Length: 107
Length: 124
Image (cartoon, each protein chain N blue to C red):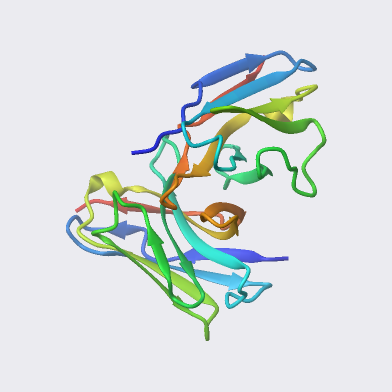
């Protein structure tokens, strides 16, 4: 079955840049999406179609894509950005797949 | 503002059927632009897609759960529902309903509105 691979954890100091990667064989052909999830809350969409940012999401959140890897970048990380981040895509048969999630710690 | 709310029993016995309903408010479930999905998250673990339904009744299921899952829609009540049969402790999770959008010719879905989630525990 299709898999999306994320690092389990990423740590950064406030004000620095956090980069969270997601790798998958179908990513050159299928868009990726990113969700932020804080404890006890539902996920929130922060990036769609690889690079687009929904209204209401701060500009410090950005997405990029290169080959089989997509990256969520958070510039000028703030304490409130500490959360779990999940990438998501769809395989070529239409099955929705989530990455395993990355815990972002703001030191 | 679109809102989704899950409802259903919080405790289900092993081997029985889990049944949840998602009520959509602030928008029509019959819109041709959207799909409606179920996603679950076991305690302390990641997200798992269960399936989507279109207002017409077309369904798309996770192959790993397909034999046990039924998703249906009731446009008159602006609701859609999930049934998961033969549950075990491994089905214990927070269950979310969400609005899905499709991109491109090969269905590529994402979820832009989510319910708050409801914890379902499978235990005797």
